[in-house]
Length: 249
Image (cartoon, rainbow, N blue to C red; front, side):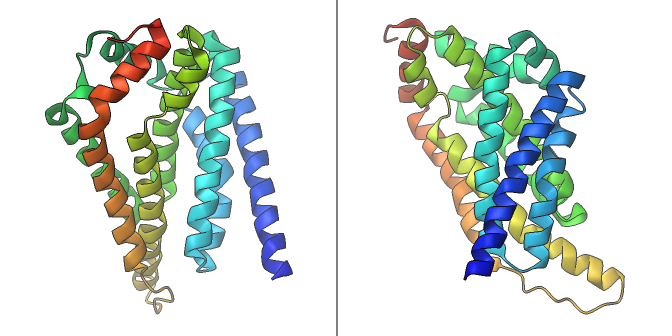
């Protein structure tokens, strides 16, 4: 038990160091193509070590904690250095502009399932494909890219709001949190598929049992993301409107 705890503490320390160094490096380089690579590189060694050690649940939990570390680091850096962040976070300014427009007017992708559903399905299919062919390394890169622009938007929201504490509380919608959990669980499960495929290509026996239940739970979270978003988006927009402008729409 002590050995397991020591390994977990070491993994958390490595993730925290990786997030700190990757965020600092990203903002020093200020190249949007470099940023997701640095972020993913800081987390992948811990991820792949957990997968190879067949510690699937533990790995998923560690990646969720990494997501929190990454969100806090990018969010703070974006709030402190907004001009640099705009050059550093790919798609960040675009997502912020589009979401602010939705908050103000109700017009945009966020409030229409017919508009956001194709994007959600496309992103999940791409993510799954990357998991299966790259042992989730490229999927982690894709996930880091999406996580970063979301946190850039939240930082801009908090900075611009008349009620910043409320903005901080509701900036990350509950459905987005469900999506992150679903993607992480999927990434862990499909990394096992990728390892087994790699073993077959090398004419070696597959040594990892596919965590089918974990994938099912991941898919359930992704579906819940869509259902909750379709249901709560109008109410959530009103809360965001109050946070941003100090009035209910």
